[in-house]
Length: 189
Image 1 (cartoon, rainbow, N blue to C red):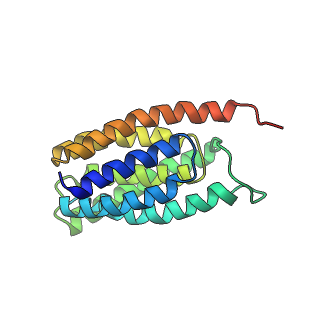
Image 2: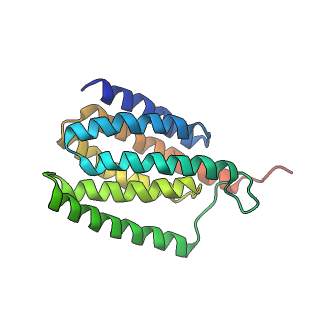
């Protein structure tokens, strides 16, 4: 355990809680979190997860803008479900991204967990995109990703990070419930 893992733990927990309560400040806190985890994952040989932090930063900037102005009339987004074709496209994207990253990790790195690293990266990228659109289904992908991340980080000896992802898993379940509740709540006139 080092300072980057501790800083990643704190900023990650705050970021996810802000997402659960649909607070726009999740994006700048998330960007700080991505910097800490980029350093940590590079040092731990989790290269896909390190690269993911760079892409997360771009998606956070996109999400920040979308949450503020992403509706059709350029107003703030509300919580909603993706259409069935959008959800199927997201699942297909997970498969394509997973295969591409796994190929790259096998070919160009010394990763000892290429398949799992690629899977969590693919799930996380698509889930982050879905979160940027305020799609409730993002929580399902995060839940699956966390169920893989926890043993992956434990295997790599990143115990604090594995514990953080256990907390994330619990927060994802709460987030799913809260976002569903927000979606079904009547809109004030």
